[in-house]
Image (cartoon, rainbow, N blue to C red; front, top):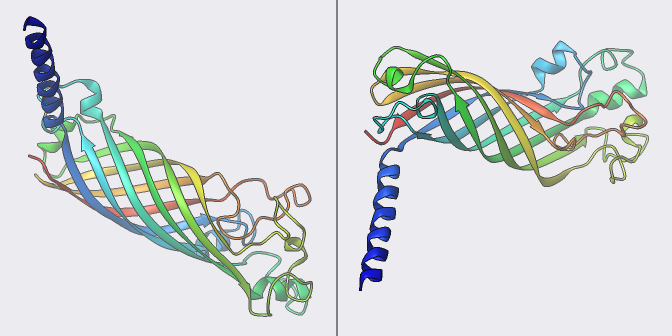
Length: 264
């Protein structure tokens, strides 16, 4: 009898503790959208035209766990960190730009590069930790018109679909394909591939929340995403032959967002 009573009390304590912990968590939901710049194998490395014209657009839905909003404790973690989960989608169109493409228009290589284009769609599911060093969450939440700058880091699981084509005809022969992409690369018969797949990526960002109203925020963010693959854009020249192909694909996403507080 005594043993059953003790067990019942322990179970009641655990559930009441969990309920109390859950009640301290506030939930925020929002939408984000904005342009993205893809650092790919199209065009010339460090070329401004390549960086500004191979751009895309993305949209996403975000959820935040806020440890401060419903808590009276002012622990440092609660007051300066949020956990964000996200589902997002972005799409980018690619063309070749740079010195080689701007060269003699009668050369076969120039013609081939100008004729080549690509398109990549990426769906992401991931999480990141936001750190706001300058202002306590409680102070921010109670100050209309305030800013709360943050830095973030996280991980994403992504599904990508990429297509590569040429207006000259099917790729894979010397008549239509720039020589660089005819060399086998990374287990593929060529340095190009129209394919689908899954990848992991790391994210690093900087941004700010803006307190629009008691239950409403605006969000501004610049975030870099580093994939663990060089096939996201559909091109991957053999790095042992073409040593300028030094890194995997990555992109920078500039977003504007709106966030609504569900719990109050």
